Amino acid sequence: MTRDQRRTASIFATNLQLAGIAYVLAIIFIAVGSVPPAQAQTITVLHSFTGGGDGSNPVAGVTLDRAGNLYGTASGVSGGRPSTVFKLSHVGSGWVLNTLYTFNHPGDPTAVDAPVVFGPDGALYGTSYQGGQSGLGTVFSLRPPASVCHSVSCPWTPTVLHSFSGIDGKNPDFGDLVFDSAGNVYGTTSGGGAFGHGTVFRLTRSGNNWTHSVVYNFTGGNDGASPENGVVFDGAGNLYGTTYERGSAGFGTVYELSPDGGGWTETTLYTFTGGADGANPIGSVAIDTQGNLYGTAAMGGTGAGTAWELSPSGGGWIFTLLHSFSGRTTPGPSATPTLDAAGNLYGTSPYAGEGSGFGEAFKLTPTADGWTFTAYEFDGITIRTPYCRVAVDASGNLYGTSVLGGTGDGGAVWEITP
Image: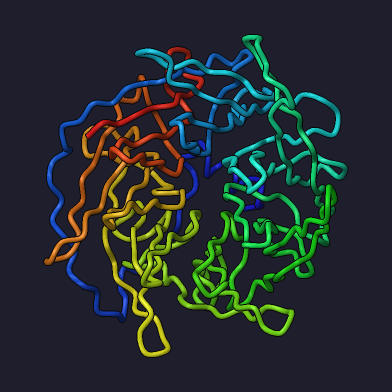
């Protein structure tokens, strides 16, 4: 399967399967908490995408600002429509969507599957899988109007910071960008680079200009291949992420990149076996204050992916299985999980659900006896096929998107109030 075929499958598919997975793992796992019935909750659709000026088919999650507004992207992947960047504002008892920009000009980013994040300058930053000078993807920014806008629609100003050409990487996929303390931005490409298996890159800012450099070229060997999502920093300046495939067992890896005298040293922390631990992580990792890493795998486990933890111990890392997902098809959880201040872990799985199989949001709660799993199942009509990272506000409300569902089946933005 080509990388483009895998990308299409990972958004809509029922045909991305793993054959011959051996459900045997020579690791002792910590006991997993029992699975209770789906918890009562209020699920509200904040916006249904029409495929018009608002866009359609949001793949990525949303980003919260301090005022509680939501920012996100609509990929438009199912109908060949242009991608958009939007803002949802809470007005009275409802929500109002404002399209900040529609990517429909020559050379614009296309297939915007990744979230947008705020940079230290207040602009939004994101990536596109395609578009740019070579059609191989971009890094872009969007700036708000320089003066107060009094119209209903207040478009932001886009700038392409870098167009990928192949040797420097190509096709950045689902991942968030991340900034260091100096304002440099880091991300990944799922392909290209010196060996054709993807890169971790950095854009260094100097005034209004940005200089691209490759932090690491994946070889497709034991280090893995095809990082589909972004990277995160720890407090010491090390970067962490996942690769979708390859590694010594062929099912993806978790890696660390450590700064080393002007360069970076790659260490493979864990290699997925394709068995009970999972296979093919699409999402990246979340990190807590103790340096523990949390992530998901889209395949393996009992059939539809896993949630897991990697904990540093004595110079090595200990793998703990937190949950195995059930679902009517694969892929399973496909986005980077979210940690709240209490240590709860949130995410989505696009085809999970004991009753529906239309997808669910989930919460994993740490307890003295392991982790307790709580599912928020979707009905397949208002919300269907969520691939997104979950955003959590200070009140514990969850926000996300679904590729399908909504009034015209063009996708939706949703809120879950526990």
